[in-house]
Image (cartoon, rainbow, N blue to C red; front, side, top):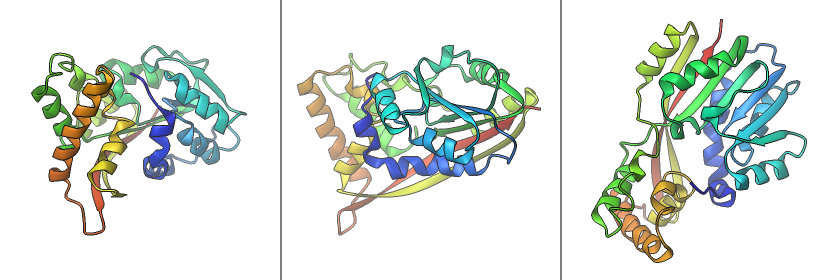
Length: 257
């Protein structure tokens, strides 16, 4: 998929709020090294460095555009290109952060044990993922994809994200691996100015990517027009044009013994 740092950061305050909440739940333990997996434009890395000012912090992302923005933002931090699923790291880390990134990686049953192995004793794995595949905004993406002339092109778009797992599944898996686990779900309600167009703009930088990337320019415009019309019905605007976008997110912190 192609990622745009400019599009993603249009809602930076809203997208950064969950990682602030996640980092606040980490235990106050000595941290010498920390890795931000799926660092995006560096907003989460910036907070990670602030939370652990004495740590050697680095970031990894698969998008060249995101990495360029992260390096511009934090020129003194090491950012490297790479795939989270294939990441081996260098040594052991006291904190591994994955903010809104693991939902794009398959087979969490294999991924999470591998990430725990990269932690030093007492190290913490901190993860936040959107938990919104059942929300109208995502359901409508799939419905518009299946109902239009692009149906064949988009037949697999809905499978771009890893299968949705509940909090109990992650808790059980991580406990079986011997980790101390804290898991929770928070639903944020983001007020977006601009009605349905603002909701569409939000998801253009994230969830809509698998649906838009396979389309040509004309198809993309038609898809977005149909999607926006459906979003307007699902998320009616207030009198001043504001739409309140509910956004559930799943969090967990797993500490290695």
